[in-house]
Image (cartoon, rainbow, N blue to C red; front, side, top):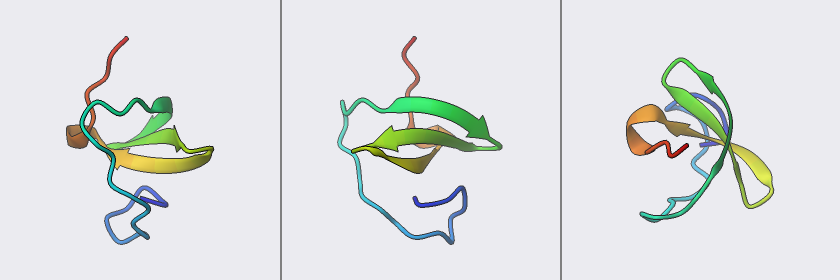
Length: 50
């Protein structure tokens, strides 16, 4: 998503196994870097690996 909201613009769908760089978290949304730009993904759609 383009912003941390279900009403924001949809950017793309990531595939299972894709890796995203996490930059932060706001409520249920993680801010990630996807193909060189900031995007947001819901917490339940992301598996964090540390």
